[in-house]
Image (cartoon, rainbow, N blue to C red; front, top):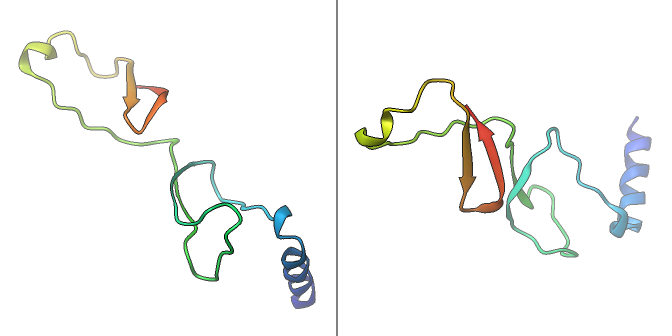
Length: 90
């Protein structure tokens, strides 16, 4: 097993342009601590990856706007950080 791992490391070092980052979930890069082509070192975070499948948003509404709002009603969510990626929620 160890030989196989060493072989993969050696192969990756010889072809860094073909290296891929594989994550446990599909997400969105929130921050990049390295530039494309910059070598990464062991133990250094290269990106912050955010799981965007589920998140909770708390909204403050004025009393005059609360009347037509009901629990479970569909709602559109637009984030300033990602203006071109609107989401739907409940």
